[in-house]
Image (cartoon, rainbow, N blue to C red; front, side, top):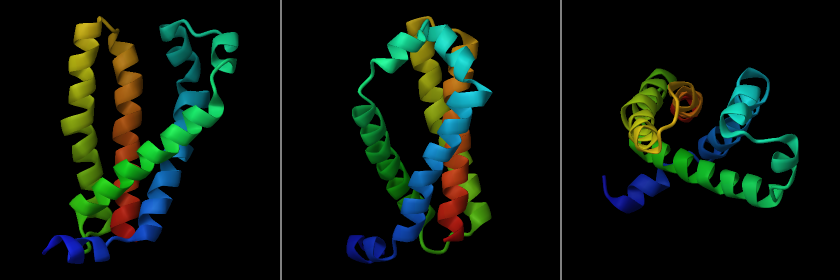
Length: 136
């Protein structure tokens, strides 16, 4: 498959839905599930978190999630199914992202819990994204 036919086969609906899913998973992950533990590890106070420019945080997150969804869509391809997409997303999450975050955590002296919170978000998010992309 050449580049132009590969891009023509992109499911843009899938890419948009997968992008949105990153926000849904992130809202639960860094909210009620692990938000307090994440903030405590980084010693963030409510004031610290409130001072962030949310347009930059959410706008940047949206753009980066869109890129991740688009590239994952290219890896899965037009013949993918939800199960193939799920497997591809989990493989990317565990095999690439979590391992790279692990290397960074070792050099940064971060705790295992801190790594697990961030790596877990990436693995779950990429798995969900992959399933959506494979299904659509």
